[in-house]
Every structure is written in C-alpha cells, then in structure tokens.
Length: 340
Ligand SMILES: [Zn+2]
Image 1: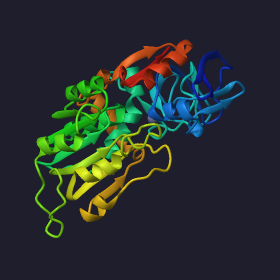
Image 2 (image 1 turned 90 degrees about the vertical axis):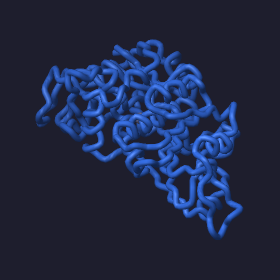
Image 3 (image 1 turned 60 degrees about the vertical axis):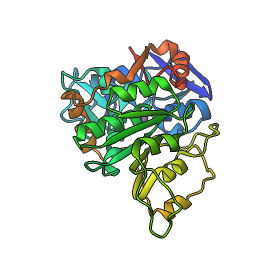
Image 4 (image 1 turned 180 degrees about the vertical axis):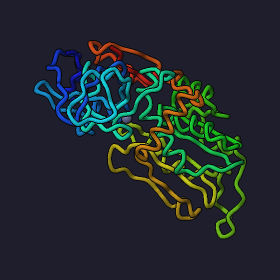
C-alpha cells in the first residue's frame, strides 16, 4: 500500500509499504482523508512528537487526523461493522490502510453521520481540541476576546465561540498571515490584526478600548480584553516576543488566558504582568473523551461550524513532500489533507 513515510526532518516521501491487518480487538480502516496536524509539522521540521507516528522498517508513518471506511473487523470488536464510515483515534493515518487499536465505539472509533464528509471527519480531532480550549477560557456575554493564531486550532476556537452562542462583544484574531486572517473573518472574527504589519498592543487598545485603571498600579495600562487564547505557543525560529507574554500585556486585571499552543522548547519571557494584573493562565490539551468529540461531530453535522472552509489543499500520498511543504507554508494554506 501507499504511505507517507517520515525519515528525518524535511524528509518525507510517498512510498510502498506493507499493508497492515486487523488483529483481535482491532479494525482496519481504508483511509479516505487524513489531515496534516500542527504536531505532524513539528515532527517534519524538528523531529518532535515521534510517539504520534508509527515505526515501520522504512521509517515512521505520521498522521492521526483521518477518516475512512472500515474494511476489516477483528475478533471481539463490538458495534463496528465492515462498511462503516468512521473517524478514529490512531496513528499512522497517512497510509491507504490504518489499524485502529483498540477499536472501541465512541472511544477510539466514531461513526460519521451521512451528512459529514470524510474530509470534515478528518478535521474532527482538531475541532475537539479547539472546542475544549474555547470552553476552558469560560467566555461570557459581552466579553472582548483575542485569539492568537489563525491556524486550524485558532480558527476552530473562533468557530466554537460562535457556536456557543455567547454574545461576545469582540473576537479579535491576530496572525502573521493575511490569507488566514481572511478565513478568520469568514468564520466569525469581528476584527483581525496582522502582527507583522501592525502594532498588536496599540491596535487591540484601539479596538477594545482601555481597561479600567488598577487601583494599586495606576501606571499599568491594558486594553479592555477579558480573555486571550494562545493558539500559537512558542516557535523556536520566530524572533517575536512569546505570544504568552504579549497575551499577558493585553489582558485586563483579573482576565484569563487559555493556552493550547505547543511550546517547542524552553523560552525566556517576563510574566510580571500576569502577577500584577492577577491574570489566570489555563493550559489546554486535547479534549475530553468522548463527549467533546461527539459534541464536535454534532456541530459539524448540524452545520453550526463549517470545516470545509478550512481545508485549503488536497494531495495524494505520493506527493507527501509537497503536502508537508504546503502545510509548512502558512502563507498559502490552512489545512492540508491527504486523500485517497
Ligand atoms: Zn492533531
């Protein structure tokens, strides 16, 4: 079968590899769509997160955001049949056939309703990650929110905020890429800021207004931002100040920051604004199983969120290198998916 095989940073090729089989408690899925995740890019660029790929003699097969058809069902698997259209939690998704182990309905395997395409199914896992983070930020009516990062996770946070039906006063999205900011507007951002072209602090101050002064620290001036989402994290080769530090400067007294971005290593930052303004910083990782995956699936099924607008490119497995390069080139892509 064909697969995308990772050898070392910047070396991913489409190759022929052995087709796997489903053992007891497992299923085999014929992959129809598999997204390239931000974490796959960290693998591609730096060799990080190898544990979310599968070792084979030629190298490693990445990919965990996939959907397809069940073609084999191992002994002891319940509630899943050959022919089911599914999204599954497993690794080595960038291949024609993927083993899901253990295969457990509504825990590692989720049936796709007929209204949900394979491509949308492949975006379910990042949707749940966004939904989880959006909830942890605890947005409330009338609040002003800033989202750093208009990749699939940041955009999914904006989609979640809209889907919650919380009447937010502002959803300001910050990114370095105009193309992604345009998409942010399409999915519900009230305002967008290109961090390369504009001064983020000044622009947010202009859009959100100034927060009430802090009694004991009257010289500390902040925009009136209640909640900041960090869907960027820390990228080693980015010279800008860490987003988390920027987020602390933007947040009002007693405001919140929810962090879902990945940190590529240790970094230097000044957290004094967090202390002075008594800001709460909340980490967010993946999602609650199975509720938030099922909830995300329902949001997609009922068209409360439109994931299709986020899929910008499709490639066959043979063009693995091109696909990764396209995903790495944020200027022209949001989500790249492999299709078979
Ligand atoms: Zn992912």
